[in-house]
Length: 384
Image 1 (cartoon, helix red, strand yellow):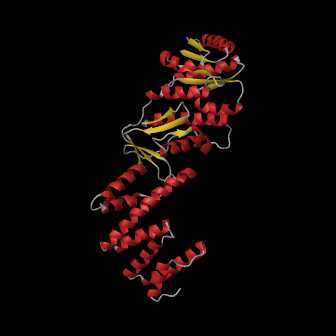
Image 2 (cartoon, rainbow, N blue to C red):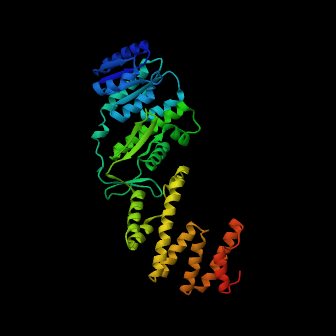
Image 3 (cartoon, one colour):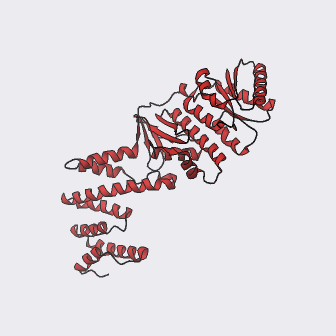
């Protein structure tokens, strides 16, 4: 087993190597050890020597152990990481989620033996790359309500996130896919209550968990470090489809035909439930929810007008009612509903609906009925 030890303190390196050789000999596990005092050369050594485990001191002057671990996870995800720290107790719980273990300085032989046993046990478990994964050519990420992943024709499933923050970070990066997202933006969004150091620890942990989860599911999705490690970019492979993106593209294609493919537009509008990540209650998702709802309403109004020309008033009425539920203050939708009630001979509903609108505008906005609706009512001799 190959062990790479990284610490900027020479005496700490010597002691760690000595203790590890003793523990390995006692366990009967042969080891090869390379010790580095220069953290800047870790990646080159990892690429060349391909260690099984890297022992990383968290606090080093050139680059932190967290940053090195993040780069290792991106380029060599099979490498196990053990963090070493003399303090920063805030990070220990987070490190346990992403690293194989952590050890406190000064080193204690019994604790190091437990770490070594954990390493040996983990090596007996198949690597992620060896685990059976689902077909990476047919994954759909469903974003309506709860974020789910569907493989092929199988049932959608909830990814096995280790923490709620990992799930939210994935959802946020997925929304911003293909764009550069600075770490400072993520820290402010997800960990505003934490200081820089604990927030970075949580961020690293969440990225690690996302990568592990994607690998286990066989999803062709990558998260890369860019801009000198100060930002991330999530890329989706050609074999992964995002549900709402596909819906939007198909809707636009159908609408841009001459004449528009109204039957297909009707099917697509029926498929939309207006619930982009609704079950997760993410504040940052509200903009996308509003954008998709606006897109739906725009095409629904055009479809409703078309249905009226085809004598399909009942279907047009259902669309307008749903539009009015989504955007209750839209004057044109309210007037369209009244006119359709009249054309369909549903006179009893006209009085009730105008009263409903009058109460809505007065109670919610403190305003009278919109002029077009008030004039329409007066022309028919209806009382307020």
